[in-house]
Image 1 (tube, rainbow, N blue to C red):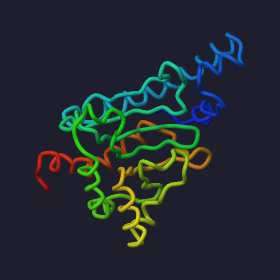
Image 2 (image 1 turned 60 degrees about the vertical axis):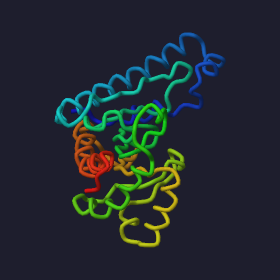
Image 3 (image 1 turned 90 degrees about the vertical axis):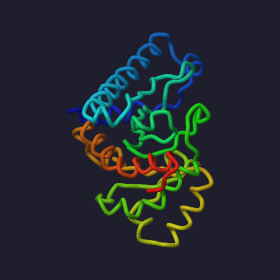
Image 4 (image 1 turned 90 degrees about the horizontal axis):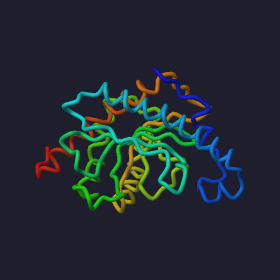
Length: 225
């Protein structure tokens, strides 16, 4: 059981993430110390997600992917992991888990990055929007949000409750999201929501999203359930 701490958020309170810029303004010792801080938080994040993956049904999910703490030229301004159904392991949609300076979030998404190397189109994925109201009947919608790919990471997103309760907002969101792709997830905000067990939090949201995610198995096989 790993608590989500203020220090995990605070690591991302950086004015600069480029190694080149950081080295211009800090001594080698300071750079080394900063790297160690980032790596220490990432090691916690990696272990949390590996534990989550070990608790999920191995016949249902593929191996979790935990993104590195750098991309070679920059420190990350968030840490990210992705979970894919074993039956859709080579498809673009996945469940992402991310922590940044503002929040911990677990969400269903279409991964556009290097999407040409995987299967599945945004149009196929966006058809899941039609299933969201029915799926939402099985969850407590508090702390759940919808947004589209073009919204910035730290923007305040549309509460799922507002989406479900207002037909005009729902139609407007669907129209705009279908131009790119939608994301749907649950958030725990820094300084507001306490998460004493990150493993439980992430795994519970994954399990809640799985029935909606599994709808894609039928669509990607050319079937509509």
